[in-house]
Length: 193
Image (tube, rainbow, N blue to C red; front, side, top):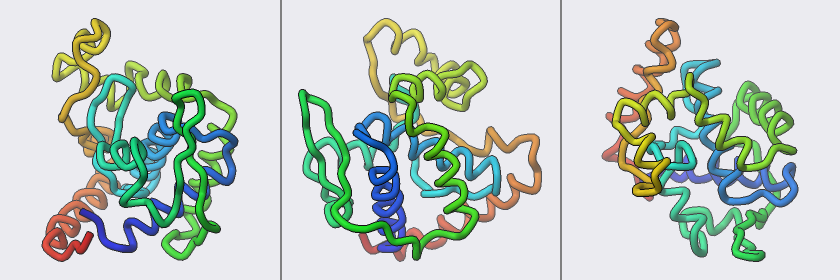
């Protein structure tokens, strides 16, 4: 469930990425969205998109966005379209990027991350999110998922990543993040979408 401005921010983030990255695949997009949230939390104590991510075989995945990108988009229908070429799904913008939902810091982070990853393959980004010091790896290990993923007996889970873990040595950012989560929780009854 999202507020209208949440959907606008997610949609415009994807428009921005699709404009700047040639042949933006579904997998690569999912990794970049995760990295935006992780890097924003590490930098500012606040998520970029505020998506929930689960531990899947190919890394952290926002299930709602994954599902929306797997068929004709519903949540993001006003922002993007999906082109399928040789069984791969590529994201194309439907309209021009609008930065109304973004702070200057967010726009700067979006630009820096885009420049850093635009020429990397989805496979490289998957490997990056799987590093042994990553939140994905520690969570997957703690829940005994690594071996199941490697054996091919499991490709997803409902185990949610807890970003508080990456802020354990950052008390000010952790406080900001926890305050944000508390505020978000109090607003859940007002979500319209």
